[in-house]
Image (cartoon, rainbow, N blue to C red; front, side, top):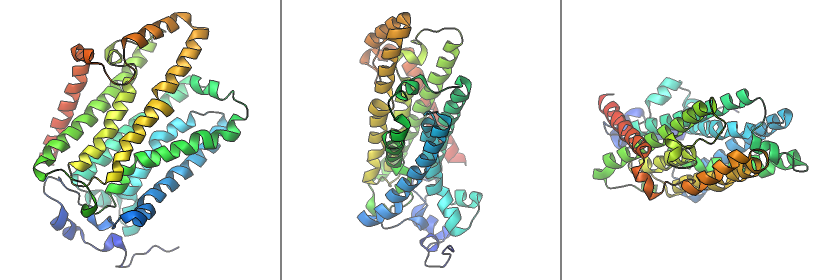
Amino acid sequence: MQRNTSLDNPWKQMSAVGEKALYADTKGTSFSNVSVRNTVGTVGLLESTILPSISIHGGLSIIAYGIAVSTDRLEVKDLLWPSAQLANVLWAAVGSRMYHQDISFPKAWSTLGWNEKVLVTGMTLWGGRLFSRILARTLARGEDDARYIEVKKEKDFWSKALFTHFVPEALFQAVITLPFTISFRALPSETLHAPSEWFPVIHSLAVGLFSAGFALETLADAQLDKHKQSSTGMKTDGVWSIVRHPNYLGDALIHVSFPIMLYGSGLLHPLALFSPIANYVYLRFVGGDRPTETSQRRRYSTSDPVKFKQFEAYSEEKNSFWPSTKEFRNPWLWVIVGAGVVGAAVERVLRDYL
């Protein structure tokens, strides 16, 4: 099928000059990607945003399922988690524009507003770091995650796995990416926005939350890797003294920051609020701390009594996901807060001088 490159193509209805004149200010506090926006509505939203996202994530999940079955590695779905979301975001922000307008990546990137670039860069940092982390861990281990070795013992596991693991996670991914797919489609009249005088403050808050979450995730993984080189016990110090799952908390902060940035940019579609909610539900109840700790308790209680005792003591002392009020005295909490402040300050400098 030949691409539609005529003037009635919505991708070409407005020139870059017209976009900037109508919607972009010099510091990027609003979005410039106007030529790709649709009048969303109920039917339009379904056609332009939700169904394409489900198609992307569903298709990739089927491919990942095939690879997982052939390699007997359920952990393939963990590799898909960040990479599929990143692929969807890059398509919505840049790839679809390159295709419809027949332009290069640098040209498509240059037409994005500052906040759009910050959003896409943030998602790229999150997805790229998490994917490389999971891939390195998978290659080093040489076998499936211990949690999945247990799960695969179920009768006819692989015949059901597509519908019990891969497809449900694809639906979660489609919802979690809504702030990006909707932000590149919705018109300002369809969105929520803060008072314009609050835009810079809310934008900095969003960048600070992202920076804090990213620092927390990165430090948690780095400290855990170093700990495993010299000890087989539980890691309970460093950022692991804030909560039992600092990497999940960091992930939640990152995904909360995206809708906040949209709100401080005048482009928060109400449906984008489901993104951090879906991410939180997944992290807590589907693929995060609760199933992880259930598996840990079962394994440690039967194979490592010493570690099981450490785990029980750790569980009584520290919260699983959200820090308790006593953590206000924990210096590592303030290290993460400081990372958020530094991240917001650096982004402000870059915004002023680039």
